[in-house]
Length: 477
Figure 1 (cartoon, helix red, strand yellow):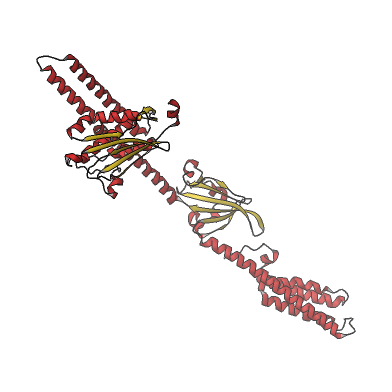
Figure 2 (cartoon, rainbow, N blue to C red):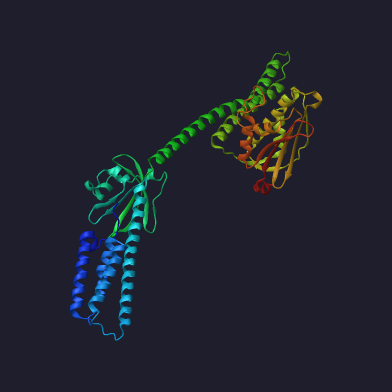
């Protein structure tokens, strides 16, 4: 494993030649120091070969060189020193020996620390699953590549960084799927596609020092092909789900229309049968026949309006608000269901209906919700004793909301069924489609309101429709 130590001259010499140069310098300094005498004091130059020896061969050899140079100094100046007391001479020799030993040890530790730092750094790069390479762009060559990079390009000596960069193309439309371009203080982050192998890479790029070169590019390539493919597959699944939702909406429209226009068609059938009976009588009552035909016409127009508005609402989830009278809406819903109420012999209690409460809503849709709730109440009480067949309809005001209450005295719903009753395609009736209450809740939520069910203390179920009162309704009043 190569280390990224600075490119010193001594490193280029190598260990053996470097030690030979250090030994030669020690010998030359010793001879020159002995020849010039104690006054020149060339012993300071011993620090150079000591440093070379400790750098190339470690602490042990450096300490040996320090001890050797100290002994040579003592031999050179044992008879030449000017100290009157020999103790001072030995004191200087001891200080010089300790200084040389400390210097040799520090140089060896510095070399070891640099080597260990390089080793840790390179080991991290070698073990990374991402491809890492260092490019000297001034010389257009790759100075380092980890094993993952070698697996991608093979021999890095056969390819220049500029040629390798040409293999990557930035396709921002696809790159935006997972990553947007990010630029930090030293490193940039971007997404590219390799044109040669067709794989996606997240590239981090930054400038770092490398040995004696203070300005090289470190690039880290992380293969994110599987993540890109997974994201694209997720988008395809979302598209399929959206298409399936559209198909389900079409089915919902069809079933909802069949569910909602059944009542107007039954009313039309009833009035046309009455007209036929009137025409078969000896004396024809033209006024009564005309009134029946007018009612048939009104119901036909109503059926057409239901078809158009429900289709538009289910498709766009929008409503057309207008100023409405709550009392009139309840009366209209009860009028639509009058024949069914009479047929089922159900008593209607509308004492809780307050007059002249105006608010903003889509009248047709809210009337359909009330009609559907009344129809469900009728179905819930068909099997009950006649004296229990009582329908209560009320309206109340509370904190900027208007509350419609439709209560029956049927068999009721348990705790789990009360919430499931609003789920699409869930029905407690054998012939039910399970869409009525689901659509009613959608209408309520489209108006910013709520629809929920509670137990009736007298037995049965209470459906509560809460709608906000628009301030424009107050201004209109």
